[in-house]
Image (cartoon, rainbow, N blue to C red; front, side):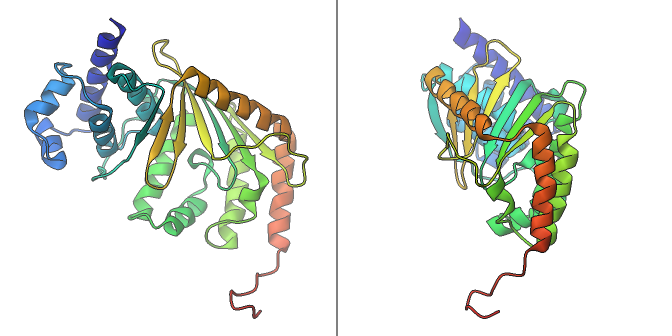
Length: 290
């Protein structure tokens, strides 16, 4: 049965992930407040792991977003809650190690971000300013992890990556002006990668499409893995795998792309945005005085 095959595949991945991090089953059980036999039974597919427990495991292991999306989608389908589900991540995240980027099975990634630069394109300075402004603990560790994750787009089997960014993201930024200027330079460098496409929706364009939230579309290499829409918020993650939902977001992405500049025009536009930011006068203070 397809469900049993998914359970076996998820179980094998969980065992591989744990072993690649050099963590024992006893350590996992202690950290999560589980029994060691529970960890073992999950990894040997003797019991079906719930989406809640799976999310807890993947969060603890520090698993990359695209692998989380794939494994959670297969588990939700087996659990009978496929289509849409909410995951509240919590607990301790391991500080050392992460599942190697080269292990990813994602074929393509499409992202739309209106008010910030997504992690795969963030410069170290911008990432640090953003994490600090969001109030997350251990910002330096988060940034180091984010920078290492960017290697996924440098590997020989790198996925096709396409990002649609709104020009508004470069007019209200975290941290200092230097942070956004470094980001604009860094983004041009990332856009030069052969498998990366960056397109900007400029200010003043007659918009024909809009999206309520930023979102990511994942396509996986395994035929048994459904396409997944990932919507991240401050405290919880929303996953959508229903064909209707996926096609809706895919259509929105295509419509937004129709409003965007071409990749070459977008690179030129980034240069003009950098000049605009450099020429900005310092804003007035909040009390209205210069």
